Length: 103
Image (cartoon, rainbow, N blue to C red; front, side, top):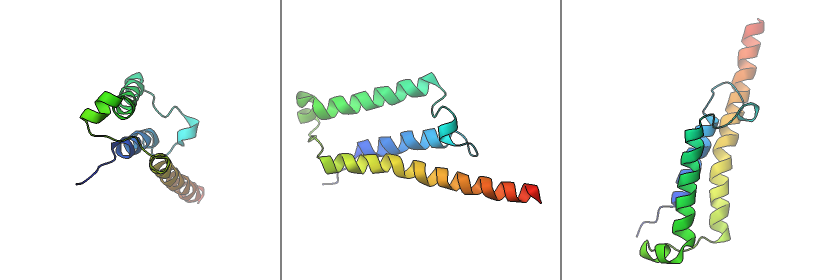
């Protein structure tokens, strides 16, 4: 049986959407989700996933088990890693662009 961890996939897509809002600007210098509809979608998806995990009747219908602490660590890493990678790439791109503009 193949098990897909939807929490990790959803977390990565939310982090990517926040980070890729601007190619040049740091995510910490602006709102990561400028659209209220994006905030609503993130809240809805997160709420539905938590209901599916922690609401026992729904979890048994969907045949889902509650995640262990290590599973939540994987989810946290899948959120943080894309942000760090993309923001680091933006930082280097800004430095390179600034060097070429000075010349």
